[in-house]
Image (cartoon, rainbow, N blue to C red; front, top):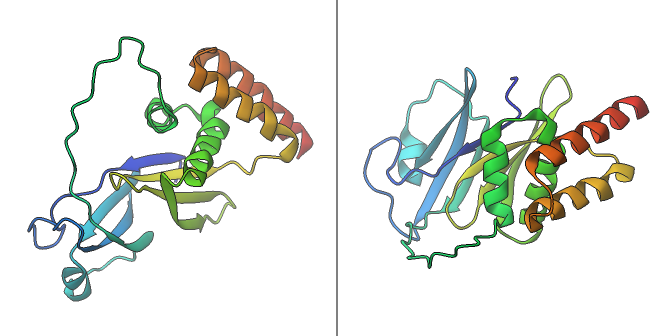
Length: 188
């Protein structure tokens, strides 16, 4: 699969019976690999057990459904982007030059207990995709593990800090990132 990352939002109704999911009740989530991406299923555990499926899940996990909470946010004229928003923005850009930054952001969010790794899938070509779920809203992120080399990690971390603090633009970081990727290719 050529797609390096993907975001799938949690459903609010059972993918099988179409009845609403209940707040704080168990839920089974699964990703199905389809042409060009993934299809997400969120189901009542009972429905998942009895459903007829002619496919094998790319990834599957048990969780708890949390109904969305509507929060009124105060408008901040100088809104600072947080790591979670930055990750979403970078993944939406679909720029392969940002794969190291995306991966480091995902690891940061995992360590902050915002994301939880649900699975790790290795493809035949040796690439690894990590499936993360956002604990707050249930969104699923499929992220390519670029297998960063330790000597390049500090530079990528600095790029992430620069983006979060607003001291560098995405264009500046993307050009730096291509230099990091070139040095990784040379060292392989």
